Structure formats: structure tokens, C-alpha cells
Image (cartoon, rainbow, N blue to C red; front, side, top):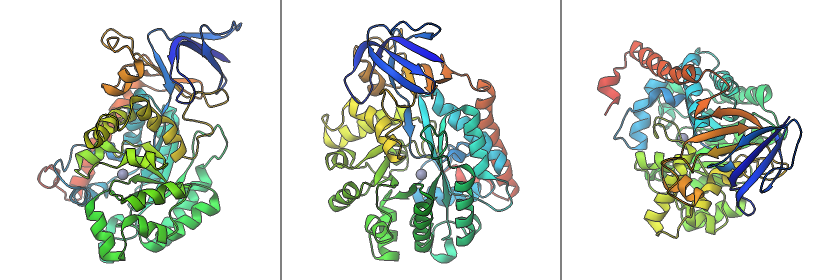
Length: 460
Ligand SMILES: [Zn+2]
């Protein structure tokens, strides 16, 4: 099956832009791209890209899909206050909540031009069904590439950690369930729609032993490692008090820096930390909206890029970045860097690279994803930058990044149309949207049954 996209402004991220060109898709791969009309191909389907910008599909490298069901709570809290308020709510979740939240969350991402998303799930209350499988089922339904990270926590309050004991697992149970998730779902093939990562939650909720044994497990299985790091100054203090080291030095000591690791946030880094990340090939998932929402700070992204560290983008869980998307994060990243360092800090094209190739590198897929090049997977977004309200910006990449995301004309994942004219095509568009609201109501009811009054305890 051949698909020809024509009359389109192509921003391939690698290589020169093509102001009016074509892309040839054969099967799940990009076969060719270039200026002018596509070569005549009998039997091919044609897509007219007039008025559109074609970019690689956006890659989201940090998320907690289940949090779709707990948005808008603890609105004015710091990270630690927010976590303490929400752990009790999350303790009530079950597989049905996760399935609905992930369906709405991934549908929302696809509609906003995201073709690959990771999902860091780290709360597994006992006897609540197969929460990991629920996320996988949702991704299969929506049709995006999925990189679920099997999270874990074993440091409850009784062991000096932040979460209540009832939401953490025993260390051996967590490791066994993580190994099972890798064995059941990880697909290492180049066209893979699903790869699993190993992801103990954070230094303040996972023990040193869980961290080191998780790293050994991931390296034994040949999968990637992910965790939260250096998100807030509270975490800095916690690590100094408990381990006598700042977060990056602590993770270095545990064998957790390397080209197979990507870290969420990486906000509070010293000059030496930045050099360490760059030298070891450790990636960072920059989540500016969440960092802003929780008042965590502004990551030193432009300095990290100058030092050669890899940075991708993450929307973070919806409970701390309500309804944002990777396209929104491109803009937020650009604005934050410029607010901190001046207007030369990050260009529109650099922001697009963070959201595409930077993300693909975080997930270890830069050979397959993140740019429009012959031989790469055909994950392509057509943005309507030349529409009635968006055409006043002559540079379509500027239109994409400087303002709110323009309407999406089409999203291809491996050559398959997942979104067309702003609607999901792989599943019922309306049902996918409703699933998130249903998951929210169900979670609030389950939490209330456990005696938690959402109104009193978690709205403010
Ligand atoms: Zn997070």
C-alpha cells in the first residue's frame, strides 16, 4: 500500500525543509520525500497537504495516564503536598479507572499530534485487577506507539519515604511484576508498537536496593530505565538528609547514569550534574507545564543542549499538567527558556527537535522515529498552519510552536491514519473522550467509599 502526501511544507527535523513537497509512504515506512509533486505511482492513495505543515509525529517521554482521572485537585500545592494529597485517592484506583483514563489520555495525545507516548505507572494497589494490561489495551485501541514504564515504590512512610505504606509494594513483588510485564509485552523489533521500560518511581519513594536491582533487571532484559529526578528543592533536601548526596550523585552511585536511562524533570541540576548527564548519555524528559503548575522551577534546558545532553519533552501526568500535549510543551519549553535566558535561548526549530528526535533518543528509537527520512517509520503529522485563522504567520514552524497548536489535519502512525480532520479514526471518537470522565467519576466514588472526602481534603 502506497500513500502520497503532496503540496505540503515538510519540516523533516533532519535535513533541509521543503516549502512545497511530497512524502511517499510505503507500508509502515517513509520511502521518499522531496520537492514538487510525488512521482507517478499507479494505485497509490493521495493526500492533498495544501495549507499544511508535515512534521515527524511528536514523542511524549513522560506521563502518568491514570492521572487523567484525578485532574484539577490540590490546585495550589507543592509537589510533596500534592503527592501526599493524591496518594490516598490513587490508592482507590482499579483496572477500569486506568483503562478509561488511558483511553482518554492517549486519544487526547493522538489528536494533538503525538504518535508515541510513554506511560510511567507506579501505583499498584493490591487486588485491583491488572493495571498494567489496562494501559496496554488502551494504547492498542487508540493506535499510538506505546512505551509503558513499569513503575514501582517500596519506600513507604514507615521506611522514611513519602507515600503511605498501603500504596507501595514489597521489593521482590515489584521486581517480579516488572519482569513479568517485560516478558509479556516488550517488543524489541524495529517497527515495534510497544516497548516496556523499568521505572522505580523516585529516590523518595523507592529504596536504593529497588533502584539497583531494577537497573540490573533492565540491563539483563535489554530494556530502558526511567525515573523521576531532581524535580524540586524538597527532593534535594530529602536526598542530602537521607543519603548525604544530591540526586544526580546519588543515582550515579547506584549505577543509574548511562545511555539506557532517561530522567523525568531534571530541573535542579548543578553545572557538574549537567556535564555528568551529557558525558554518560543520560537523557532528560523536560516537563515545563507540570514544573510551572507545581512551582518546581525551570530546567536548564538550553545549557543542557549546549553541553550535549539529550533532552526530550514530557507532558507529565494530567493531574499536574491538566490537558497539556507535547505540542503545548514545545511552546511552554520555548517560553520558559526565553523567560530565563533571553530570546536566543531556544528557537522554534529547536523546540520541534526536542518534541521529536529528542524524545526518540530518550526512548532509544532515534534510528526509527523522530525525523522524516527514507527508511524511518511513517509517523507523520499534518498541521493546518495555512487555515483561516493560522495563515497570518508565514513561517509554518513558527506558527506551530509560537502559538497554541494549530488544528491537526492528519496523524499517521506507521502509515496508518489514526486522526483525520481532528477526529480519531481508529476507535469511537466520542466514546474515547467519555471514557476519561467516567474514569474520573469512578475514581472519586471509590475514594469516597474509602472514607476520603475529595471536597474537603484535596481540592485546595
Ligand atoms: Zn511524573
